[in-house]
Image 1 (cartoon, rainbow, N blue to C red):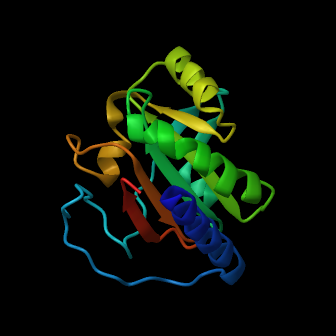
Image 2 (cartoon, rainbow, N blue to C red; image 1 turned 180 degrees about the horizontal axis):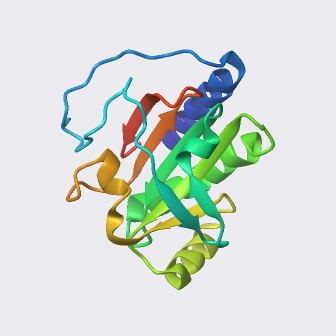
Length: 166
């Protein structure tokens, strides 16, 4: 039940951010926080380009002007498997039609076939991208840091929320 409340809170936050536009959060965190993040709230989100499971190219800067949720995940992560159906039902299904919102799952260092099977097993339909070698993950967190992370980016490309183990 706590998971559902968390995702309801995140969904509400995303909706408000999409409606409010360009509000900035200036909360400061240390350079490397206890959760392993190397970015902090208020930072500009680092640029990256990834290929999605459908073969499309996702470039973060192409999404500027939208509220973006990045969900870092992997098939071997039990917590991710519990989290993803809630992201699907409480965030994706409610906001996928919003032109000011973007959700991207980023699978860390697994081949396409494994990611497609993972999506099928968890029942997610939101876009997923491949992060070979975990290089995009390493733009946001220490390489050795654990997975199950969500990053919310505002329309001006500033990080406004960082979660770990929801």
